[in-house]
Image (cartoon, rainbow, N blue to C red; front, side, top):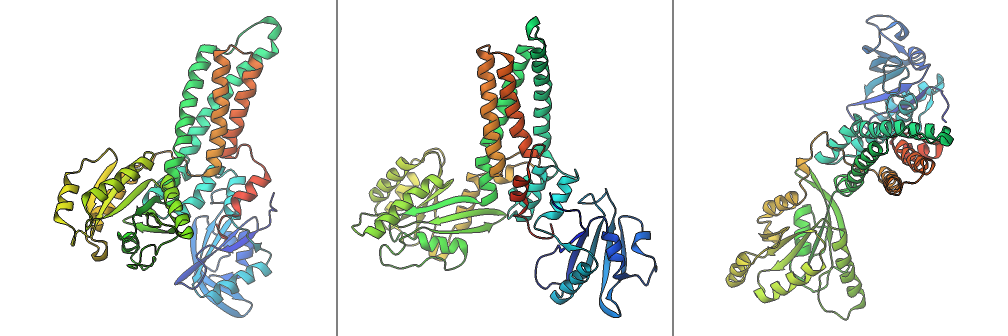
Length: 464
């Protein structure tokens, strides 16, 4: 575990800005701040000030005035870390920030490690481990859905669900283990029918939480969208239009895009992860063939597939391409982007409009070069995965560590179900229930070790 020295760090973004915040936490935080801070207004030491108060004054190194600042005072246990905390808000000069930081270190503080403030909050019982991880997710959120899910998890929505499950299981394992103490007397303290109902309910909840990771991964990393189609139908032009930059090379030469081009963009509060793929066609070029194979592989990773077709081609050619792509999809949303509508064949456009669409399919007419109807295309992409409909109290798993633990907990509870159906003895039931409790406890940090904590918090920014 980490030492208990007072730690300090810049809590705002690196670089120059209007203001910056430097955070101190630990037993001597107020004392160290007092040694460099002077308030001309009250003249009082910070140690004499009430908690949750702001104080104007100056930071000095001996006779050298460094800056005029605002100091916030928080006292244990009513602070983010559960310790005494001082936050110094100074002007955003990089020199001033570093000078104040150096001064605090000379007075007895040490530099905080990545995530050490949040780690101390966890160790001091201010939050559990899943809530601590949600802090990092909230900082990294790039869209409304990710922010909603992180806020709910940080407030304990996910934790309370797991705590409730663990509490009910703990009651029954206590009864089962009591039975083991009286095994020779053949008594039953744990009602098997009641346990079956509870285990069935827990299995359903764990399955839903585990399955929510697919949506959670989309929320956290962006909706994966594969842009696919034949050569020269306008895939790269469409990607550039959506990204609003010249990301992909556009050329009349067939086979220009030979590998998958990937980029993430936030559009109207929703993050999309676009894959511009190599044009699909018959070719003897070995490198281009590899690119085409990668194009098909991206279909499996995508939640939304945009099939770009050229309305300058005859409908039979377009229909054949749509049929081939349909045959490779496994439940993804398909948007047929009929491109070059401004120059398309009237007959082709008419037949496309009359074409029968399958479930999860949409048809949008666009002119990618002129950016015509892109709003309609974006709207269809957003509707394909309705992230805006996610409520603020929705419990959705976005963390790989949580997903792995839930998967193992679910496997354990399934073994309990099987054991109850086969009337196995209580000691075997207790073993599987304990295993389920272990994995649920790993998520919230009730069961943890230094290696797990080190891995989690090293990915935090310094100052949080």
